[in-house]
Length: 292
Ligand code: NAP
Image 1 (cartoon, rainbow, N blue to C red):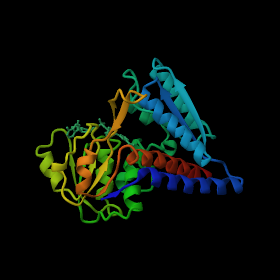
Image 2: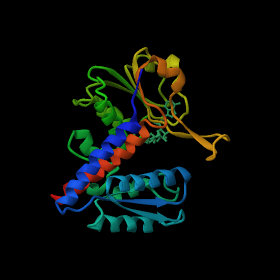
Image 3: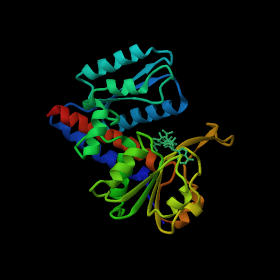
Image 4: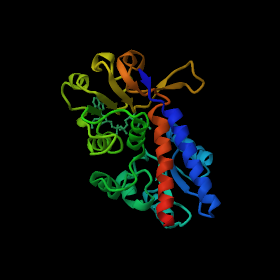
């Protein structure tokens, strides 16, 4: 079993980005600038956004964090997005989800200029990804692809089962794995909560990518000997022994499953850091495209 170490790989990617930023600076160019809008004070969202700000500092990007009250109106949020769309200093920005229930996430996604949509959630960017055109691919599937690429995991002709069909993880993941690319060229099955015989389908997988948010859903009996297992899930599980009061759990029963795998990602330290690195890659790309 080989660990797919997302933490170490993301540090390598960040070092590569920092080198590129140094070159941009040396040539008198504009340093990439990422903005993030955080609405309300959801604990997990706070953690994610704060990490993104720290990542920016680590690679030499500028960053701006815009905090809005949970009670902010949809109109006010859309107005802030419009400002960021028009601000020449901002190369890319994200609106951290989930949003309060009174705000329509689709409207928010549609309001973001696709050229600054470094999360890759806008219909324009999703459409470009579907057509195989250069675009911002959403950070988590992109991070998984990068991890497979850097570890030279052979995916061509393999049976890849993606568990979960969300717009930001499962669906793009399935699409990317099925494309004529490397990694990719897999034969993909996408399963979800209405699928029958999930265990049986998972057992037939050479590559399993699990993104459902159900701690330890994937058990050893669902995994074929030698499979590659990618655990996207992150759930906060109450844990009194920790100062934080919780620990992070993946969708895979790691301790039981790891013995059967050729490659496996840990949680934490697997897909999570790769997602963060992908956002930086997208922001750098946005800046380079704007500077042209
Ligand atoms: P989501 O929008 O809630 O989607 C969950 C998907 O899982 C849905 O398609 C759902 O099926 C499916 N599902 C739920 N229970 C299932 C079951 N028992 N069997 C089969 N399918 C089931 O979640 P998401 O945004 O994709 O996130 C999934 C997990 O990944 C969460 O833990 C999230 O925190 C984590 N995540 C991690 C990262 C990272 O950087 N590591 C990034 C994003 C998300 P239906 O469509 O039929 O309801």
